[in-house]
Length: 494
Image (tube, rainbow, N blue to C red; front, side, top):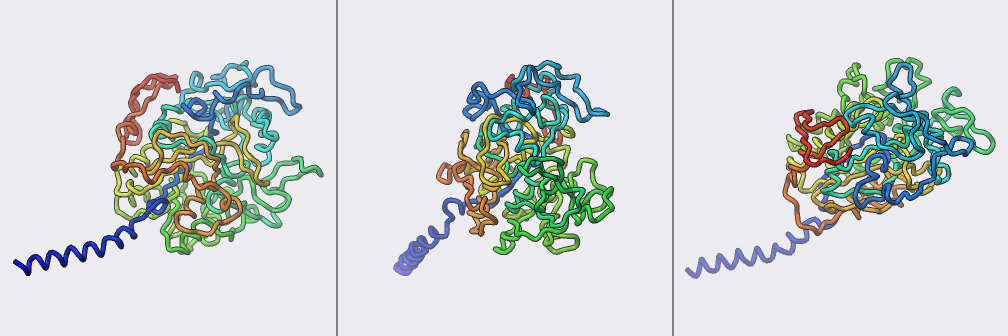
């Protein structure tokens, strides 16, 4: 009996001695994040989707926003009729009236969210002209799409909007650089603009002595690529056969390089990647949405490319196999990325919700932070003037939603962020050196997170993320896509 008591006391003493060490090894604060998953969608401003979101800085705060003016500064009496870039040739879109008031207008009565509108201009110099020193009054004048920049959907109760209701919506998140997808994807991974010294004259913009645009181009006079060009590396469009028209390999450090140096696993998952590499890209595969492919460390036939650049289907496989890297970037294929002109808003939103749902149902949910963001504003108007930080931007506000057991619940975060705040979160979590001055100074999304709130079970409120309130102008009541069924729960306007 005495021997048993002594044995029990010995075990108890060992447990007590070990307890402080166990407590000390438990992650705290930001170190509780085990996985960061960034889903990058396309081309919407904040107001063009969430201007009516409860509690957000939306239309209710816009007051009597300055009317849109033409290039001479004169207000439009009515908005030009929206153009449809999908017509052959492009022209006025007969689905819209030709005399819309000079103010934001709902798109859904004319084009429901499961259909496609025309596309808009998104370029480096043009967005600066649209912002017009913070007056936000020349989006129509330099939008190349008639009055379409003033259009908006109410995405409050669409699939991603439902996630924003449950988790955290960032309403002062700006895309990092003026212009389009090409440049902003670079800023997402390197907080930098690609360089092209001695670029061919036909791709270089021409500015006058005051810095005003005379002739547009993809490259600035001092050698930075700011509008869409393609990489000398594969994949790039087969139609480009002159290698002098392709951007040379880039050598600046990327977040991938920083993570690899710290032995932190990561991958970029792109929809349609495998087919593009095999030489038969999907018609909606976007070559310029693959920023790592432009870099020397991830060039053709390099170990870096094999290890880190993957197909979106590999992300779903990793969720199930237990091989998910610590940091994942997901770039959906064109039909799923919400881009006006070639994709519908609704299909892309459903696709994102299905990705989130897969994470929620996986073993990784308990320590994951999912960031749903947009590369840039797509030429759409927004009433909040972006802060001016440097020659590159940031540009217009874009929606960003933080989905995580750590995300503040039902919260609108008014903290100022930009695309490099995603980098800052990754850098903060894994103790990485900043890539530039912008990410070094950025807020790291911490205000969207609460590491002390009660834990959420895996699959938190899955019913709400799989059964969305859809009330589109076209009367959608039941919609099944991609294996998921979306039912109308409440009748609210889209």
